[in-house]
Image 1 (spheres, rainbow, N blue to C red):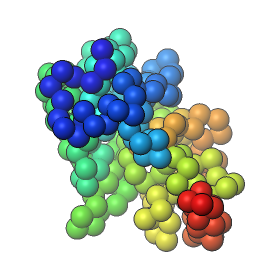
Image 2 (cartoon, rainbow, N blue to C red):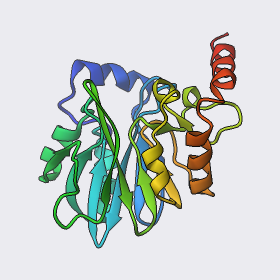
Image 3 (cartoon, rainbow, N blue to C red):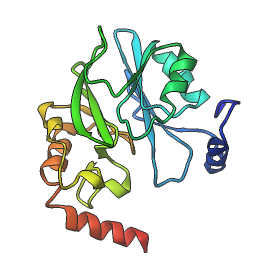
Image 4 (tube, one colour):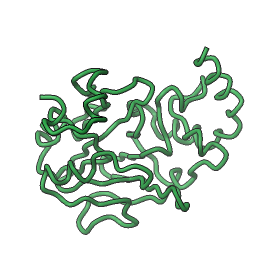
Length: 217
């Protein structure tokens, strides 16, 4: 188990940080895994099941993670939420034998989720997924819980690159669970955490900067 036997040079280097992924967001209908790499990155992948089918979101490839994906149900597709990086989306889709949906503007036919536009710039096209049942929001880089995302008072933070222009489209839903691309998700009063992060992202820039500077000392 661990990384696939055919690893790139980069993946072999990352294995030095630990062989196995760290599982997070272990819910009845979902699971997340953080790649074994420099701890500050906290790149998190997810699988969300609905109606017996499983959607894999922004995955980093690892054998033990794909075993957990299959245990949730029949893989239906791999969804890539951000165009600035591909992670291992294409390879995981190939391994699972399912389509790779790269930054879709609309949900594939029959999918149990809606696509929420987050950002569309020349070099940054990002969407989020909203699963109405069980009220789960899945984000890529727009929101995160890794330490470098958050001001001291925040449980979840807006991307440092978006604090001046926070993704207000995410306020259109009231999630019970928020799964993010960097860090573990939020499952307690998640809607309030998202509202606070988006609504106060600009105001909290000084506190976030001070926290970031202190962490570098």
